[in-house]
Image (cartoon, rainbow, N blue to C red; front, side):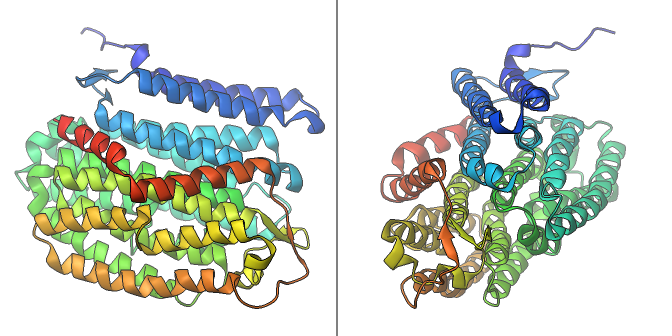
Length: 478
């Protein structure tokens, strides 16, 4: 038996991120507390280097490695760019908070890089086993990050809830892989694709269990219950990061499994995912109406946006893939930006995470209030922001695929969401600021806010360069 071909150049970006995580962990063990700031720059350098390599590896033809388990194609390249942008922005947002709250610096950045590595592997998976490896590499660091504030009971509770429910969802995913292997005789997605059209009960059961495992990570109803509690309890920069990186990794896997590998069985799973999309949009937006805590509100917002993104998956066409990838990029920018504004404030040395903490912010810092208003308007899907175009693209893809009912529900829930998003913006322009709320962010959080604000505006007004690139990526898929 010949050994499978191994081309390390194809996994060089993943190797750089993994090496960065190991280096940060080991170096942090020997640095005194006052000098661990350098670890932030080591992490950022590893991410930027990996990003440069990903862009340099652009090629016209898909390339397999490790026995056709790892695939580097246009979709891999695009999704990994998004993952690395998210990781870099998370490093910028985290620095001052980590120092101010005395979190374990080396462990924090090592876990952040490890989670990004998992999302990168999920984007490059051509086999269900590698997909599982990427899912666990993404998930386990997030469990630890949620509980990394060891002196905070809320953080400990968040980490425990996330771990227990996450471990439970993993068993569904693994059992689904086993059933699909029993039906197709392989875990390779290309082999699975050749058997998907048969519609055997074993294959359908496996697909259903995979949906549970991936739906948990993507916060799709009814697998969403962990998100609001974990988002509220985890440290603020961790909440910002996990709300985006888990979604990017999960939807990367959903594209690989459903839209590409199981396209022949779209009749079987399309209606089920459409129903899940409708439930997710309704519950996420309605529950957000009742929230006074910003982290919980953004948690339910994350659930609602998972429903909107799922519309592009339901479309199961190239337009749907393009819309999902563009939506993931826009969602990352506007969500990280919104959390970045909250990171700029503190209340008596703690997180200023209540909506009431924003009262009077426009008078104290018009630029900060303007940035938050921009992010809220974009999350609501209003023009001329990128959030409007992201929703427009997924709605168009679904209409072309024959799902008008899903689009109608999406439009109605978008109108509902405008209330709670604009309520946050309204709060900043009325009332008197609470004296205990102070500014706490630094220049690097400000830099992240500038990048995210510019991204939301530019992608809303001049989206053509990015959308053309993403459409070329979708057309290059085989």
